[in-house]
Figure (cartoon, rainbow, N blue to C red):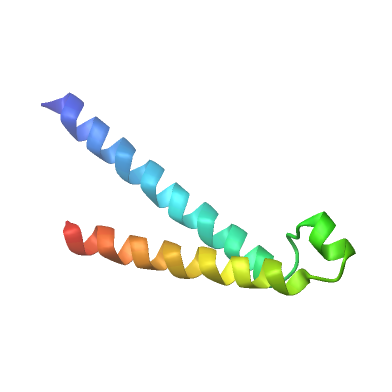
Length: 70
């Protein structure tokens, strides 16, 4: 019984950590703090910004769906 509770808590912590890291990466890409060097070298930083928005939108969408599933 206790094992299931610990496993459930650990799964929740890991899931929340993943959401936080994904959002941090997405926002860093949008703010151009985190870039893709070879894209940046050719002046295509807009691709990194678009990828950042995709990361943020899909993370928020999956988080909302996971919460609604509960």
